[in-house]
Length: 97
Image 1 (cartoon, rainbow, N blue to C red):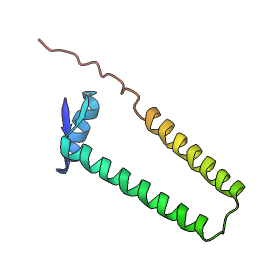
Image 2 (cartoon, helix red, strand yellow):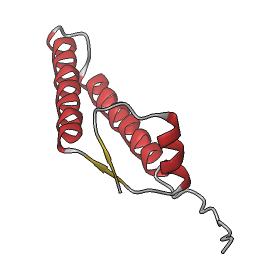
Image 3 (cartoon, rainbow, N blue to C red):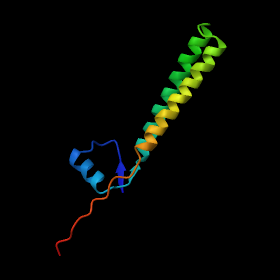
Image 4 (cartoon, one colour):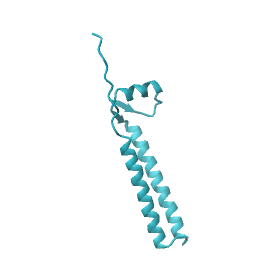
């Protein structure tokens, strides 16, 4: 199992991880950074949406449509991420002993 950290990962090591179909584990620091980024993005979306709504630029129906569109985009991203989690092809190695 390879622990994903904030340290750079060489292409050679990445290739090895892929070819060996290695499992990955996020370090505590990486998990925290992902959570911080998500909180930042959620706050930005909320702030932007509130600003647009409070300025009277959108009708209630437009707000509803905007939220539905955002949810649909989130679903697409989640589906894309889940699809990319497919297992790699196992490589059969011949033993010479």
